[in-house]
Image (cartoon, rainbow, N blue to C red; front, top):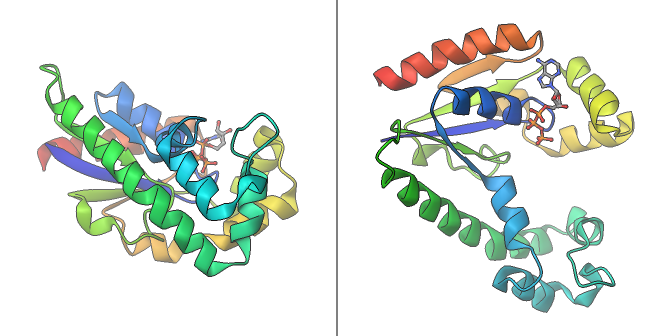
Length: 200
Ligand code: ATP
């Protein structure tokens, strides 16, 4: 099995590239989807988070209030680390479970892609046989986040600035996909990268 990390900044096109890789037979493990699942009411991870941060991070109907949690950790590094120490091991455990399940499928292509937005920030590149980094020119990323996600330009820019830089992500890249242009151009690059992954 080849285990490949996939990352990129917010709005760079990770999900778009993940889908193109899935179309070619890769199994995708989505760290964001797992962490959302782990924060559903009734889960141990949500209970533990509430014990650490208080009930003010819940909405009236007992769901995680992401904005409230984000505002607690935004300027408090110790709290941010505490949250990570609750959530990250649980996400990793679920990712391992999904990886093991994929391998028992007789039709498994042998390519497992883990989509991890903060792969560079959390120093996980050594866990993988290779890392695909998706990059999109800043102006284009801002345009997509504003036009297609309805974010304000200032909010999009603040989120981008809070993440690793393009340069920091390039340093961990085995493959760099430039998603600044058409989907067809991205698809061509994905095709080439997938071929190289299969040949590893
Ligand atoms: P996030 O970090 O927020 O999860 P992401 O990196 O997964 O984002 P996508 O959701 O794949 O990024 O793409 C961001 C937005 O840009 C989406 O609305 C997507 O449809 C659009 N998009 C992605 N690639 C292209 C492209 N080459 N041309 C035009 N639009 C694109």
